[in-house]
Image (cartoon, rainbow, N blue to C red):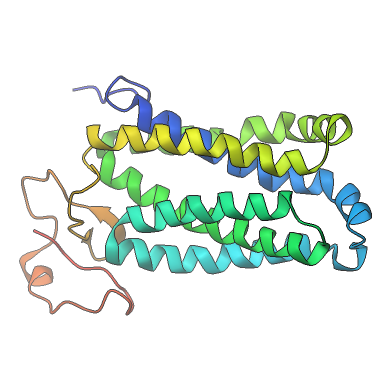
Amino acid sequence: MTAPAVFSQRYRALSVGMVALVMLVAFEYLAVATAMPLIGRELNGYHLYGLAFSGGMAANVIATVVGGRWSDARGPFPALWTGVAGFVAGLAVSGFAPAMEVFLVGRFLQGLGGGLFNVALYVLVAQAYPSAMHPRVFSALAAAWVLPSVVGPAVTGFVAETWSWRWIFLGVAVLSVPAALIMWRGLPATAGSRGRRWAGPSCPGSPGVCAQRSARPCCSTAAARRPRASPWSWPGWRCSR
């Protein structure tokens, strides 16, 4: 039996919302490099220029680690929505920043939110889509970085010269809200509907993969009889039957 298309009716809202959010995250990452000379000049922050990049990247690394553990312990939804909220909040802080120091706080929040969101998104894919669809979904998410990398610098330059560099951040924040709502609308039609209790990842060695709708146990009997480890201890996942 052929697996459904990524944008088939059943998965359309969820797929469109995820791809749109990934595109916005990618655009924000790439837009900063184009806009930073103007931002540094207007906010008198050339001495903090490098932190606008390294701060966001460091926050992203931290959030990736925390988001993986959090998603394994509680499911993808808390980390997912916290990440989206943190990303939008960081964009708003940067967009309204009166000084370079405040701008850097916004960049740090963007990195934290983007890291949490990206990790939880992959856990959500494993939970919400059949395994046969996973390669197609991951391909769509990877392709979502292509368009921002091609047109992002040109769009960033146009917005900064026509209006203000602030709209580069505020515009992405505004567009992130409907994208998140579209993704939220798609959740009830999938295996990972909101309100369903997270059963935990399926097998040791496969963190973040939920075994919902599986007619057979995913782990061996010996593995299933192992004592459960704390979700915050390594490896941090457990078997579910």
